[in-house]
Length: 347
Image (cartoon, rainbow, N blue to C red; front, side, top):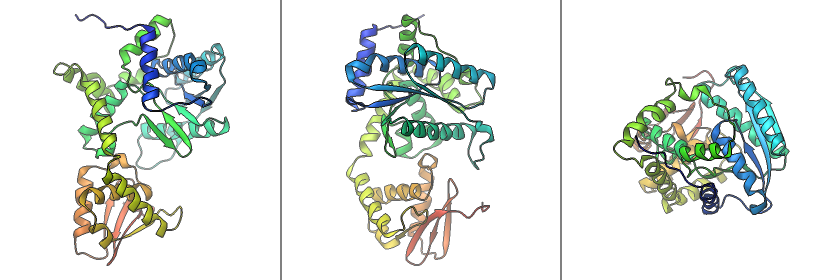
């Protein structure tokens, strides 16, 4: 039996501070909304950021949303977060949303929960003057996400996993624990004698993520004990590549297209000739950007969709269309491709 590897509390905190510095996550004067579910990852995140309040010159506000998925158990989790916030002397904003009652077509319960959670967090951040939002995603979460999307055949952007930093409109979303393994988080909490709550659904094998966490990654670890770090480094490399000239060129091209389309429109037109003049790498990036602009979720795109779209673009058929994920479709006229949402009720 292998001995549990441990590091000092000082080393643990320094590693997270190094991650914050490496990805330029926080600056002096930032007011940070910390998303706390009550689980070990978010409790660790909150306690670590509380340690950094003075050294980094930041302020914290806690936010928790009860999804009502686990009944009384999830309600108790919210009470736990409220009590913890009071002990730490922090303001806590609570919300309760019955996710099962939210009407969203072609969306799983997990997807609806995530959507409602980020809607609540964005609103709470705005109402409390927070320019930064911090979530407790860890190295384990990143490795699981990358593996899940590889297995499902995701696009390079989706396989790049959870971005350490991204923007939700004018809110900066950061993941300070993204380079920290779960075993070190649990060790930190144990040494701090810090309580947290357990979500029993995290061990339910009916969820795909749990199968990857409990079965797939442990099996691969027998071949490569550093598979989690390998996958996280792979995600970082992909994110770097997505900032390549091809991607930047696509962004410029898309911005030019959007200038010619109505603001806030979900119906995006582009000349076929303009697309065909672009290299394949830029065509692919443009396709993904226009798909998102039309209301699609890039995580749903696979390499197969790109191949179908490229064939559709090159075909000589007029007045034809192709269905894409998330009720998005692309229509072809004599001169243009139009990306738009399908009419309600149309499959």
